[in-house]
Image (spheres, rainbow, N blue to C red):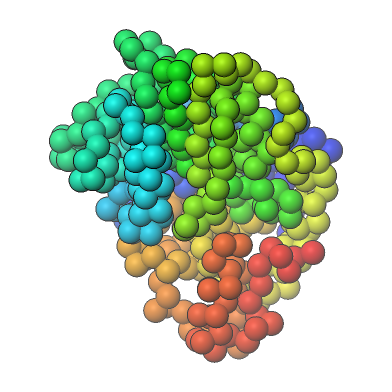
Length: 382
């Protein structure tokens, strides 16, 4: 088995990985968008986070995906996550708005607009900013105000009191410049509020389950502090979400706010990541080679590992979300199977791709007859 990845002191690359930006009824390709692309990582040493460096053609694929009328994000009725992950971020934004009592509210990257609808149901009006056909469709369906283009400071004739975004910060290539642009669009005392992925523990472990082509940034807690402080924000509060492994961030622009380089954030986590990663992938390769029957739970987190061994549909993948059952993710030939499809056979191994839900999934598998020693995660791949 030839490895499909390379690593050095300062970079990592998977030669080909599914570009899983939507769920589909079949494996048919979609409108000249690549179903698989390389993915490569480097460390932003100044800010302590990992970033993906797409080529021009890869950015073209990303741009096409963002503009399509497709299932994008988790805060929509098609994802099966509206009442779990969606509820967590909805409450976070509503609680923050009620605390600061803003008059003008904007959501960057509003997607299907369900957060805007939730806020409206609780007495608050927000305007969405999103370039996609998908968002336009939902704005017409849910009747929320939409600026159907990419965010830029030129859109704001007057400064806003409150700007928020969910699952956007990790998609922005120049996230430091984006933060400065948001800062410039706020009134004195204005608030920037966002939810984004928390990759701190994955980076510390050398885990690649966090990799997605759409997520060009993989943040540590310290990186959020660094980026926002340099943009000029103060009163930075970073908490975890109530569902999944996320950051809930609130940052305020004060009259005296100035860009700062003060080291008030946690210590760096990224140094040594590529060494840790190599150890994990060498161990996973051995597990994959020795397992007669490997199954994977939480497909979006297992696919990066499967790509490193060139598996694009040989392994069965499972998820507990019933709305994902029998659907396909781009670039992978097996459909997602549900919990009801899991049956233990002697010699089976289950690889769980999620730190957050590992204990819960392990318990469920053991109730179905899987011996404890047949259930592994990247924590065990040393």
